[in-house]
Amino acid sequence: MRRHLWTLLISAGFIAQAGAASTVATINQHKHMGVATCASSVCHGASQQFKESNVWQNEFARWQEYDPHATKAFQALQSAEGQAISRKLGLGDATQAKVCLDCHADNPPEGMRGERFQLTDGVGCEACHGGSEQWLTSHASKDVPHADNVSNGLYPTSDPVKRAELCLSCHMGTPDRMITHRIMGAGHPRLSFELDTFTWLPEVTHYEIDEDYIRRKGEFNGARDWGVGQGIAAANLLDTLIDPRHGWDGIFPELVLFDCLACHKTMDSGRWGPRPGTGLGPGVVRLNDANLVMFRHVLAAVDPGAASRIGERTRALHRATTQSRDATAAAARQLSADIRGLLPKVAAANWDGGMLMPILDSLVRDAERGEFRDYAAAEQAAMAANSVLAAFEAAGAVDATKAETLRGRIDALYDRVKDENGYNMAAFVSALRELRRAAG
Ligand code: HEC
Ligand code: HEC
Ligand code: HEC
Ligand code: HEC
Image (cartoon, rainbow, N blue to C red; front, side):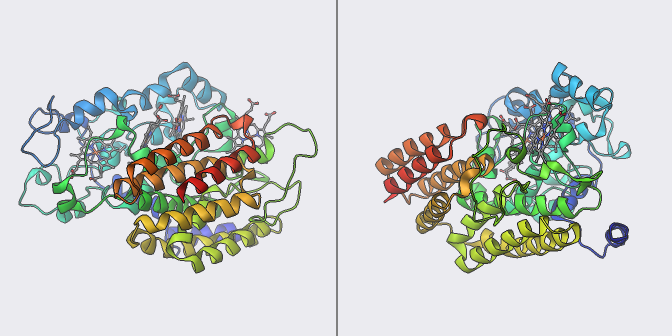
């Protein structure tokens, strides 16, 4: 009954669809003309960077040669591994399966593909920049403001909230592009993402934040992007949990939303320990709250009051999962709304060097009370430390010698999360303490 009501309300537009749902809609709003239309040597297909241009103009060449979105995403579906996954799921050829193509290619509906469009191009320009039918000509003109192109379907990739929604639509999954426990069970690798870390992996970048970029589009700030990415990831999980299409799989909840290691560990007894942030006792399957935990650390620097509110609401959500499906949905809806409400404040905060210590202190406090028992949260904490430090370094808020010491400590922290199966909380906690000590 309740499920039916949600479906009606959502289709009638009474319940605002999650931001990520509108991401896919925005990307697919206009025809995708195909990578080939971007690739002329006077457009983005130059072999060298243009000196006098605002953008490099060799984006296509870089993408084609180095970017895994071009070199690996579609190929993964052709590989023996990809084919085995889809065969086990009864989906036939992975290169024809919508669920796989939605993340491993640019996959607009049939009618939204121009003549030069090719699915085999993989995650092409328009998978991120949006279908170009209405802006292809105008975006090359200096007389047309960026905002006009955006209203014609150019996706606002420079906006951190929008960019987080875009990347996470494939790197985490959303109600529109869903990775399920069944897909994982068939052998799909676990997805792990952190916005700032992934944005700056050299193989995917085809832009630089220089003077003209800042003038045209504003600053990039890695710590801010880390914070925004955590909020969107947390809200995504909650939105999927309450989405009538996905929250449930037969008699069980959709297990991909839960902490993998709550189930996938050996049966030797005596390894359980409390995590105050959940308030749950032993023997309970926990939601994967890694991003919720991290968002609380983001807020520790931006709005400590909100941080403790989110902490309480997270505990309430965990408690609700032991009560009923309705209680869970209500708690998740509340928390998702809270987070989305706080995101503008996070995006607009002044992410200067003063943010470093409150974040590290908040991480260490959690570590000391046993919050990093779960591998997923520890992994996010390591990426958090990395992004936050890199951002402060770039802003000149930490001097070079100190930055180098801190970098060593962060490498040690990464070492502790290298192997999911060999994860040891005590070792992780001491590495985090070392980092905090070195920071001052
Ligand atoms: C929600 C988006 C999403 C969906 C749905 C999805 N994938 Fe993936 N897949 C990814 C991402 C992202 C990676 C890369 C993981 C990483 O390395 O961070 C990946 C990795 C893979 C890999 C490993 C590739 C490599 O280079 O090692 C294979 C194989 C694969 N996917 C096959 C499939 C198949 C087959 C399907 C359909 C049943 C599918 N995927 C559905 C997002 C998705
Ligand atoms: C995985 C997503 C993704 C793909 C695929 C992608 N881009 Fe980008 N692109 C971005 C992001 C993120 C930025 C940086 C944010 C911004 O300036 O909008 C960017 C920036 C750019 C810029 C610089 C904009 C500026 O104002 O300085 C150009 C030009 C560009 N991309 C062209 C391309 C072309 C051409 C392709 C295909 C060959 C492509 N992109 C593929 C995500 C992507
Ligand atoms: C349409 C889906 C899609 C979108 C949107 C997308 N990606 Fe990806 N991305 C993939 C897939 C699939 C792979 C895995 C390719 C492989 O290894 O098989 C990938 C791989 C990557 C990798 C390499 C990961 C590794 O482990 O080496 C990085 C980095 C990355 N993406 C960053 C981004 C960023 C940043 C954004 C947003 C600006 C983004 N992606 C948006 C689908 C997507
Ligand atoms: C509620 C418990 C539970 C949670 C949480 C859970 N799983 Fe599973 N998982 C199972 C069960 C049960 C199976 C089926 C085992 C079988 O087929 O014998 C399974 C099977 C798998 C398999 C196939 C293993 C094999 O036999 O080769 C993989 C891979 C997997 N899960 C990954 C994950 C990942 C990744 C997550 C987190 C995103 C996760 N699981 C969360 C219970 C869980």
